[in-house]
Image (cartoon, rainbow, N blue to C red; front, top):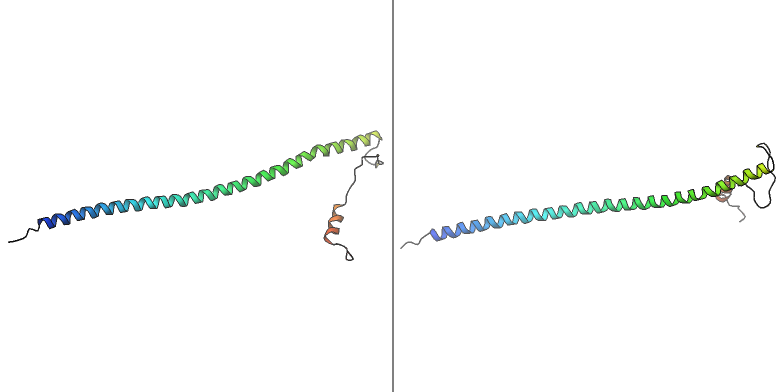
Length: 126
């Protein structure tokens, strides 16, 4: 008697179908993994850009504080100029004469260039 080969062929066909389904599922999972890995890379780049923007915002905030401090000083500057002009008008002086010192308030010119040179070249005996 002869053995039938039909069951073997059917099991081989079923095995091939199972292998094809498994390969399709493997390819699908590989694509899914690649997509998640790409998303992680893009997210890391996005995070770096956002951190850079945050650093830039901190620099701008510091600059805003510095500008605020400068603007805060203008009021004092105008007050000093008003005092100078008032004292000049009070003494009836024009631009060519130097006002005499008024007790308590006086504008003084500080020679910054000489102070900076002295700071960079300290005395040798000290």
